[in-house]
Image 1 (cartoon, rainbow, N blue to C red):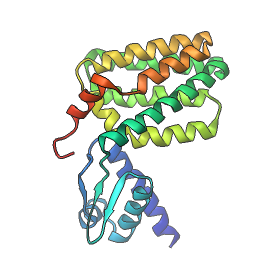
Image 2: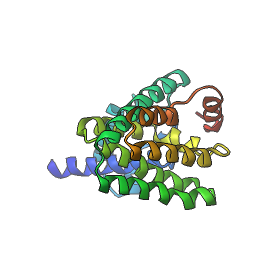
Image 3: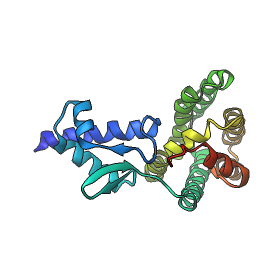
Image 4: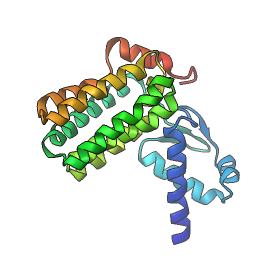
Length: 219
């Protein structure tokens, strides 16, 4: 039983990663038999993994039909980005006051690491490096509970944040926004850090329209 639970947990993490990196898109079917064959396991741990993902809001379970990668409606998506923006602002506000010199150096390094992928227009590479940048801000808050909750929502929105980076000029704009946030954090300006972190995440107006236009037609 313990082996099955561990296998299910491992499969949950693997499928979650496939969703986060865009290999599985919102609305895609998650057939238990197909997944079992893909990962070389029985359907039991696959089913348990999908149930766990459903509890996290990443998967929609359907009676007697394949589960689906969850789709988020426009109104709900705006709400989630609003909450994410406030969480990022809170993390940045605390990080400006609490980051150690070594954490500040790690933040700068994470920002600089994004530069090459920005110049190359490599959205996939930038996405992964962008994750490391935000994680550095979360850790710098020195509030483990806040960092954990921010990470959960950040990951829940991952498929949409990844798609947003494919909008024209978004990578360059994102990098510039990171630069402004780094400057505020290193100077210890808590309120400016919070303001810039919030503005970096929130989607509204034309930016939201661009995000909606980038979604797959099936979504």
